[in-house]
Length: 369
Image 1 (cartoon, one colour):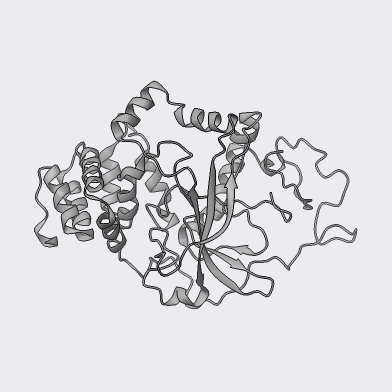
Image 2 (image 1 turned 135 degrees about the horizontal axis):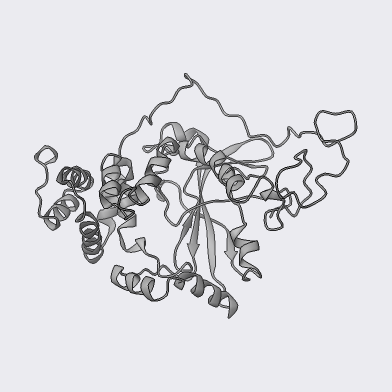
């Protein structure tokens, strides 16, 4: 809740995502849902999609690593993931990425421990967070940003708008800018949590978006979901209503519970001194060129960062990563899917691919050796 309206930073506990083009998002979600015939989870669909979407390799490697199962909500980092834009009063801008670093330290769970907890107490994460805040052990995160000059986007070795990639912290160091502390629990969970609606498109002056394709899709997709889930007037609910004054001409709709704007003028422009649209806070301009079209990304280096991540891990961490992947891939029905995915691991790092192939009792395909 800022002095100039609400600002939502909708992020993730990983710095990257499985896909980088919003057009693929519905299909990705479908693979995580239940099979329409068996109504069971379908590992074949999951790995078939990932093996045909090599840009997912970086996120898959994080997901299957130790960090795939945080011990608590307090013991994990947070990320804005996407690239955003900061613009100052003079109209000068920079590209920016957000990092929330937990001050509790990172802790994770082994799969067998996580399975045991899920069976015994499926509310474990909610309970842990509530109890920590209630007893005054307030969870906190330091907020850092990486800042990239606008012109660097044209020459950086990775596409800075590709959400399956990270920016090297050696190239763009973390800069501490703030701190987030969770200092109270909700008084009513439904009113303050279930009815909360966040959207990457909820911005304030000085914070803009980037050409990131996934972000561009999320800008309108979240509000669509809110209108379906909560209603057309979700922004008027107490939890979502800005603390600063808002003047608009939105009227009517289901569950309009206030005076609906009363008898005031309800359109703009008008001759009755109603609020006028402000042009001071529009998104800052930036140059574009080319033809408007539906096109793929120009850069297809899906393996460097996934391989770098694998090589950063200790031997114990690599062993657990490989074991998690092997266990997850065993139920896949088609061998060709397994072989196709093994190729991706091998291209990231030969040892990575070979160890997974060995675990599955398969050979690394000859064409990638």
